[in-house]
Image 1 (spheres, helix red, strand yellow):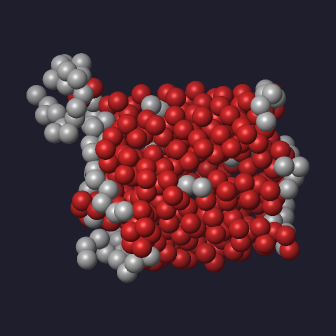
Image 2 (spheres, one colour):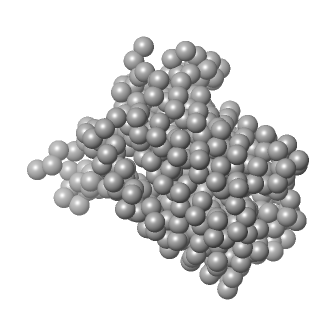
Length: 405
């Protein structure tokens, strides 16, 4: 007879149909894949939606994202103190409701609601703040605790490979939906799938953690000697990542002259190329040191950004994106594997490590967005890729973090 998790608090957990008998790690993966599907359907075209909404102003889009990430900083520590009391599952459910609020407000925005559009955007930012503060840190804490210690890289690679499969279909589906039905149906699909992602959460054990840092203490620790390597690395990681999330879709919009379906098909084609490599890198991450793979991946990834900044044709963009995708796979799997290892090795500081990591990622994104406002006001949007190339090398600092003092 399977033994229930010691921290499970579900009613009737000894009953044969109790959710306590569900496998925790597959449930967590299922939640992530459904959430990823929702964000993939919306995410590729969200910057383009905002770009059109703000009358093709790159500066306005960058400032919107900067405000979106900046408002989260105070709430991330408070959210950690809250989920220390409520437990991780309840926090992740609340976070998912936050992303559903975001999809709903943007559905209303495109549907021509009588509400002020900037009020709807503000509510959408509130929804994103909730998901950022209440979902991500608990998810990473759960995975660090539940993930297989000797095969984290391989398991992450399989998860990312499944995400890549979703990325093959999602952009094409989203492009077709936008062309035939409009953005509002795309946001509604994201809402429905995000809602479905809540179901697997009820198969997770109810685990509670205790966040021990105070509000100001958290920011002192963030830049203190112990956490500084992780902070610098994650600031760099967040900074370069935001270029791919925000600037790259707008760049594709310009290259393909606003053809949504072609943009989706292009994004899907790039993903297909990386599927096999994703599984190979995961296996090599477990066989060799993630730190060594990070150094190789960061170099290739940086060169990929440089190449993207030099191309202006569809063929050139395809070649540069393929090369860059190789670097992204070589970098992402080892970085995330090492991050989960460090979090798990932090013992009872696992939640502190994870929350500080999320804050550092946000700082990097805000700083990069504000810097790009200045860069794109003087140079073309392609200059953003050269900045991302330089910043991405800072990820190497992660290998210097030591979990124990």
